Amino acid sequence: MTDETTAVILAAGEGRRLEPLTNRRPKPMLPIADRPLLEYVLEAVADAGIEHVVFVVGYERDRIQTHFGDGDDWGVEIEYAVQETQLGTGHAVLQAEPFVDGPFLVLNGDRIIEPSAVESVRRTLGSASEGSGSDEIAMAVSRSPTPSEYGVVTVENELVVDLIEKPEHEPPSELINAGVYGFTPDVFEAIRATPTSADGEQSITAAIAGAIEDGAVRAVRYDGLWLDVTHLWDLLSVTGRMLDRSGGGIEGSVAESATVATATHLAAGARVGPNATVGRGATIADNASVGANAVVERSVIFPDATIGPGAVVRDCVVGANATVGANATVPGGDATVIVEGNVHEDVRLGGVVGDNAHVGGGAVLAPGAILYDEVDVAPGASASGTVEQGTQIRRG
Image 1 (cartoon, rainbow, N blue to C red):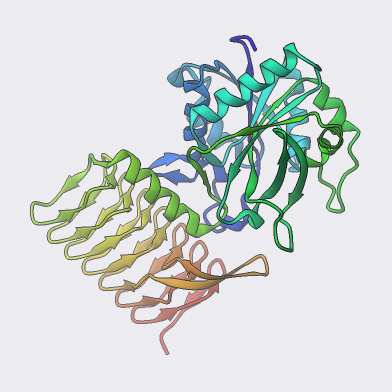
Image 2: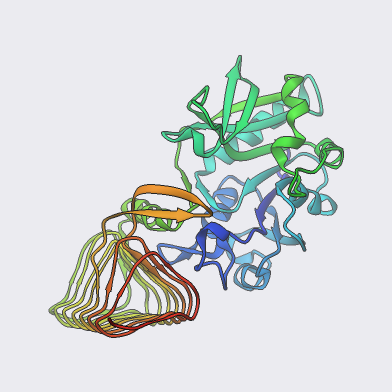
């Protein structure tokens, strides 16, 4: 592979399982330690020595293009391919065809990986191109404790011989598709020849099924960092992992009597009041404030949000310009959460407060409560379950 290898990063999806946080922003722009998730993916690509990047964008694409621009701040050249309608990952890759000249890589824009994954797939694809066939494919595979949630891969003699998307029964392997591919331009024709699914989409994995049968997909084993943000509670756990790795940082203003733990992040415009406590795994974004005597632990506080005096907020995501009033309580802990009809038990999610929502003074959110944008919980009231946008909850 030459130094001119292109990396195609898929960032067009809506992220519906992450509503309400994705109602106004694309999933790849959700903050992890106060930086967009997509930024971590781009840095892995740049650190692997790739200088030409194509973002496939669609939903709320202006947010991505405004933040990343031409890529100069990251030492890369970024071009943008637009997927007007989200019709699957294979269809997304097709949109990048005019920007690709020669072998290229494809990555998901919502999974944090290390540069070594990119380097290994690039190297493996290079050796394939120089060897037996120009149409060979490289695919990163990694072990997962929950393989059934992903595409489960069977590998024999370092070739992918089977790939089952989210198997309903016992998975045949702990190996999963890690979402980093190496392709030659031949894949574009394979995608075009792939029938659409019942929901009208074309996936990458369906497009390369024939190559798997032909023994033309090389497995690239990867055991480094691999963090996936699929559900709301993943935003909290992945943020915690990244803060543990980086140690966090305090740039905002902190009252002398306040306590801020290690592995937290306070943005430059964040404010923490007297006797307040900010615990491990918490991020406080720009222009967000934590009032006197409040407690914020393992939570993600978006820009312009307000945590009132004496409030307790644990295992919670508080959206942009949202308010958690004085002495309100989000006790945190494990919950049962229903997402798109699927029941997820024992997930650690204290609650989600959507953009511009308001939780009144002394109100309580039950574990797993999800308040959509502009919900208004009256002082002293309680909220649980999923509360639709604009709902008003009154006491009694």
